[in-house]
Figure (cartoon, rainbow, N blue to C red):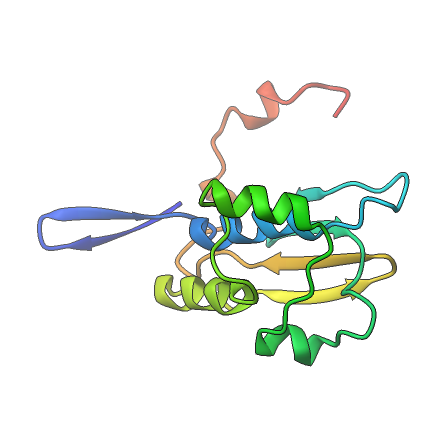
Length: 149
């Protein structure tokens, strides 16, 4: 986590854009292709990025250009309807723009979007103010990490 000092107050800056991550997670659940056996939604955190991957590529006939322009093809209508009723999803086709806006507003790099094999992946990069030097790692980390990791 990074921080900025403005006047007398410190403002914490999360390593990753929380609003954008929430949006991508909701969409990963809503748009996953559950007919692909053995696949699941995967969240992976690396030292320099976070990846959220769900089973299934874009729906047939839909391109990345369509996706970026807000074209929406719903794969799981029941999940989407429930998420809308719970207030987790808003208007269809707005997720990409919402994620970009959240990243830009917070000063985060734009995420990457990829179709890979039978999956769709979103890659988030940490806030530029986040420090990744080894001096930022607590001294007791090697002691507390289990041997079988």
